[in-house]
Length: 227
Image 1 (cartoon, helix red, strand yellow):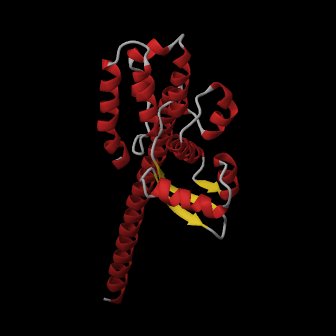
Image 2 (tube, rainbow, N blue to C red):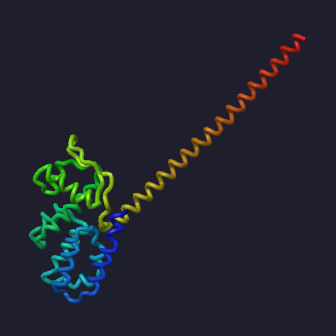
Image 3 (cartoon, rainbow, N blue to C red):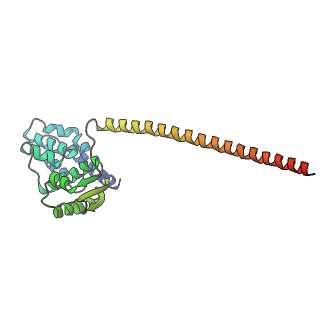
């Protein structure tokens, strides 16, 4: 939650700036480049939803809307596949997109192999990869985890969330609904087990009382015969 809280004022800042810019001029392009280069910003859907950005559509600068969409939902691999149709990234943007790619991978798997990361991020070697994960991901606070050199993997303990893709919210709501239904079923089973245990406990108490009463009757009978 800490990384999301830190981003809130930055998002508000860029949204306000975008809302005041009129016309498909270089100012909107500059804002997109600044937002996608900012070292502490990792969410872009609110900026993308600002109506003024639509002024870039149909112009030579429309590729910058595509670029902003890429930073909201895409990965480094997506960029490499479409690089011919997108603006060339500056170094800060390249780092940012690789950071976002780690977050996407962490959404799907909490154990990320070095081989997978080397391929997805196009990093030269393991030393460079580990430096990137430490300095550009864990130190920044977007992920927490452990570098396991023996198993050659990064074990993710926490990863900041990315912008929701189209349809992802509905899927999340369905997953939560399914989880709640499963939880209700489990709770019902547990409650039945508790009732059964309570019933057995009561029957056990009743049986002990009957045994105790029977023993007392036996003792009385023995004493009566002796006397």
